[in-house]
Amino acid sequence: MKPFTGAGLSLKPQYYDTALECDARGLWFEIHPENYMIEGGPRLAWLEAIRSRHPISLHGVSLSLAADANPERRQLDRLRALADRIEPHLVSEHLAWSTWRGTYLPDLLPFARTQAALERIASNIAQTQDALKRRIAIENPTHYLRIDRHEWDEIDFLSELVKRTGCGLLLDVNNVFLSAHNLRFDAACYIDRVPADAIVEIHLAGHSTDGDPDSGLLIDTHDAPVAPDVWSLYRRLIDRTGPIPTLIERDDNIPAFDALLTERAQAQRVLDHEEVAA
Image 1 (cartoon, helix red, strand yellow):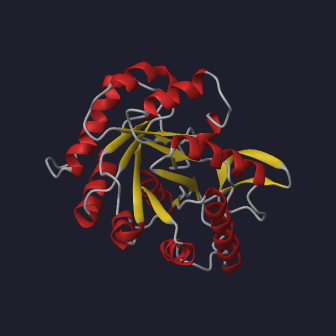
Image 2 (cartoon, one colour; image 1 turned 30 degrees about the vertical axis):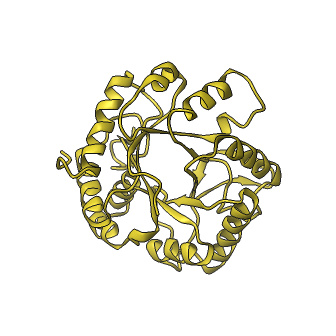
């Protein structure tokens, strides 16, 4: 059972004061926990103040669940300490890897969906959930190139991870749209096949074109408003699943808080079935 069905925003220091005072119905905020895994200080104090008024979701970028290694224990301990302190409505992480033999890479990197990868990632998810004493959700990745070594269809792979570990899915609709464009598959078909009962959160974000005009790639930049085609896919998903907590992600070119609230209100209207997304 989902704790609420409102639309949320990425929490940024630029608008802590405004976020604290905002009373929009159903509003919640999501953070990258890596920015708050500290023992004190003003940033954590602001987070606790906002948490006293609005639900918080933790969206990690550093557990490297698809790496050929166990999650780092110290990182899990720090994440659990923050989760115990904040009591988030959800903890989520990317289905990607970003570490290699002690080296941390500033990206969320792809992997081949092999049987070995399935076993390894399922184990890493289980270790994470055991350490945190709570369920997590995993996010579908954005794809930019074809990998020939896949043994699993992506939705079947995600579904099997849910079955084996009891984790949830964080469905990023923008990632689906970009991957479908970049790899030339049907985004609507993907949206229709995702197991609805596994989805615990949805992400919406903007994107940009690659700087190379010959590549034709779309890049997951989170630096622009949600595109009309992504809104259409979102409406299609909500028509099938019913309301699911939805985040407007914005990590660059951050506009005024009122502009983000306007975009967030559009998602809320879709969740309330009051308006068809443009």
